[in-house]
Image (tube, rainbow, N blue to C red; front, side):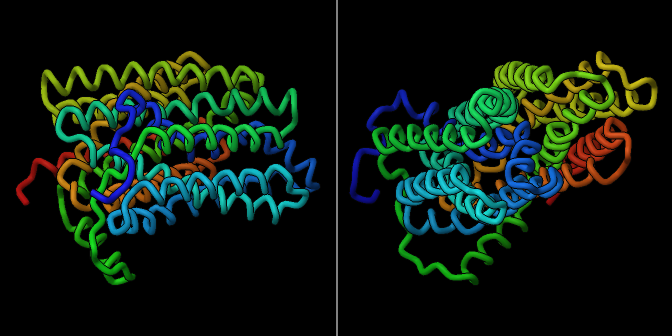
Amino acid sequence: MTDGPPVMAHPAAVVPVLAALSALGTLATNILLPSLPGIGASLHVSTAATTQLITVFLGIFAVGQLVVGPLSDRYGRRVPVLIGFAAFVIGSVVCAVATELPVLLFGRVIQAAGACATSVLSRAIARDLFSGAALAKTLTLITIAMAAAPGFSPLVGGTLDHFFGWRSCFYFVAIFAAVAATGFAASFGETHRAERTSVHIGFIGGGYLQLLRDRRFIVPATTVAFIMGGLFSMFSAAPRVMIELMAFRPIEVGFFFAGTVLVVFAAGLIGNRMRERIGLERSIQIALMLCAVGSIAVLVAALVNGSFLPFLGSSLVFLLGMGIVNPLGTAQTMAPFGKNAGAASALLGFMQMMGAAIGVALSAALSSDPLMALGVVMTMGSVLALGVYSRRMLPS
């Protein structure tokens, strides 16, 4: 272990602090959704142009993880996390004071570069500290926080925008990051022994190729990525579905998203209990079936009448399955790769964000009927995830 503070100065703070690290990226992504029209009006650009604030963030967030992960295996976790927090705060302030869209986009790039470090290293630090059942339990709690952020953040963002304007959203996430950074600095020392090897493109690429060729990594990682595509397609399409097709108000949509957090939280607890009773693989298989049933039900709801209650029930079934698959699949992906947990977490994070980006793009492009498009994308993702995971049982 490198010199410095103890690995855990305050063990009780481990899960809350790692959850904050994990949630930072999704918090910064979704808190802006209710404010995009207001940002466009303030900066004299179209609402369509302001969607770049989401796509640019996701792109940098995904690619940046591929760089941060191997660097953390080489230099340790603590310093990259603290640098990531600092970059995020600086980027948030740049966004808050921006008067033109290019400046705002520049701030989002800095934000995303910082957030990718905290997100990817939350999983790597968990792998440094835990293994087996303890790792699965810790990653479940971290994943609940990561899933809760997209649920609560639109409601928080809409409230801040209503009372204080859209710039307050950036000040809010800057303060959140500063508090989380303080907690991390006070609670964690270095958790990973630095590897004294050179870091270059060939070294990084070779490490990723090794992971991609390993069925223990690629099968559960791809499974989680497909499910994330369905989840983020729901996050992006649900506001349009509920407002345009079902005549809900934006504030009611915010409460809908907040309610999804309860389902994800319950799913995480159920998943842990299932893992203890029937094992990890069987739990994931059952959860994937739930995702498929819920997704197909969304598609059927679109074909029949598109009313709210069938949409709600179908979405809850999918979320229940997702809330089990995501943490257990993440734990299964990370468990065999303790020595290079940074690279494994980075590649997993990249695949998750690319799955999310593809899901969002497809749900926007496939149909003029947003509920139909959502049902198609969710069904595609769930069926593909179930098919990929079934290959885990095949001989190598």
